[in-house]
Image (cartoon, rainbow, N blue to C red):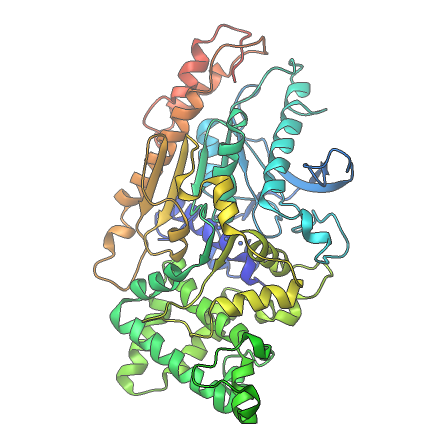
Length: 544
């Protein structure tokens, strides 16, 4: 089952599918799939699932803390042009990393004769430093620590015992050209890795790279409404209004209708309430106090995510068509939406209802769900609080800043707060000052508003079309549109790999045999620049 912390990997797989098959109008993850085989990228979902391990430092910023933990990683060398071919580092994000997916990255790797490696993100999957995920033990879970994990892994894989340099009996000064890939949060890590460690990678592909930490992320809901179109948006807003009313009258029944009766209400402390026309707390009727203290944000978040997912994945008809038909026939919109949530969001996508339960998020025993871990990163670093705009919102007004802050406090205790100002100051937000990064974003993906939207020198932004209910979407799935994105990505990877190739120290030769193989590939109508550079090097030379 997929938790709400797992949707970016799904989105990432979708983007690779778009480029690979030209049939899926979706984006490259904020999560790996355990359900919904209709999104499978190939007959075999994984290139490899053989686990490998390295000892990783727990705290990269303490000179006195020498504790280590076992970090899982995967490697696939079948396409690698030994010994000097590139290495593609696929960053595994905020979910368990159970293998190397067989998707478009594999296609690119084959074209460039690249090895593909992916280390699992600290704390996620089998790479947890602790047996108990208490708030105190989670203090080493951050993007900053994760970036140093990647740097250490990169060096370990390049020069470590039984790794590239040792395997080919090369000097420690030899470097294969590396290129990093990621999506959504891992896309942000990809861009940030290029920013912080430009000497360790030739470039970065940051698909849906959410490099901007956002406190009140109202643009997320606004994009959902825009992508839905006027009629579908109006239907969703009516559903929100009706559900809010039914929650006040009989919350258990309406939750049961959606298969989410396990999501109980949370209660706010009186000093967190806003009384517009009341000044004396003790004079309020008990029933009024109960309604004000009661908050069904967890359940309402589930409903909001269910709608947003269809536009993230470019599949609006799965939601909007049933709502439109129900409206025409005079059928219940709430019941129609409930069927969609249960059949599509929960059953087909494999969403776990419990991952929306704050009581579940308090569980400190590691399990298959990544929700407690991702929410800690949200609450301590990046926020991305998907709150309802003041006007014309699709989601319930109960999903506000207070709901998110209360969740952080309730689940992790006092003192856990997302300082987005410092996060953006540290990385630069959308003004990131790194070079040689390709950002790709889906036109209807709500997460694109936390990514870079405009190209600048050495930072290319590609907006690819995803389906919506607005107008003609035929261009979204045309082979020309898909090939344009493909060619732009390959073009920049090729260019930046070529710029990594400068004669340096003595090595073990060059992969001149791979040039003929790539030139004969009809899907790649050019001789890769990086191979031209390699071919010009004298025998025994290497590159950086």
